[in-house]
Length: 273
Image (cartoon, rainbow, N blue to C red):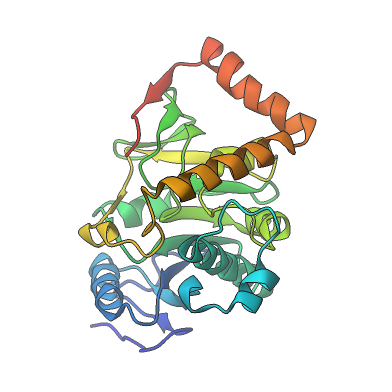
């Protein structure tokens, strides 16, 4: 038997409410995405994981004034869906800080959690003093030698390159770091490698990944303009401008990651997902 409390801001109690004692699970969901919400609710209940929905910011409904207030002049995340996505993730970061939440699993509403996810979460502990993120999604590249075993055939690895934000563990220190440095919005929510080069946090990955994208992810509200040549050109120009403005330390870390790390570590390249 389990209890479901309808609506945003309510904790959904699953069959095993005591499974995660020191962790909160938040699912980002647009108010009008009812089918996705119901699917995630059913999935989480079947896995025995307590969770809470976070009402996503719909960038498409923001006025020009609201967008101007919430974004920087030089902004790589200039598409409405990207702005809404970034602000939605930042809502969770702020909630973690306001409610003094040590660790949170942040999910978007178009994912499939593997059956082992609960056991993985129970056996994952993030730092109490250093900003850290653990990706549960498929990553592009990671260091082949694991940091440690998690459970069964799952292990923790240092991430070498990754750009997805649909499923990740984050501690309060990392939430504070990201909220401080990413608002007003100037970058998409998933540039983990870049954030690490800026010394905002350290990124790890669960291998093999226990969370995958569902078929609903093909109907993205973020990348609806993908393939537009004018927007692609604007993206490229903005990225180059931001790269030039990076602090010297970030440029050195970027070079070190690309040129030095592969000399001392075997890198597993899974390619783009």
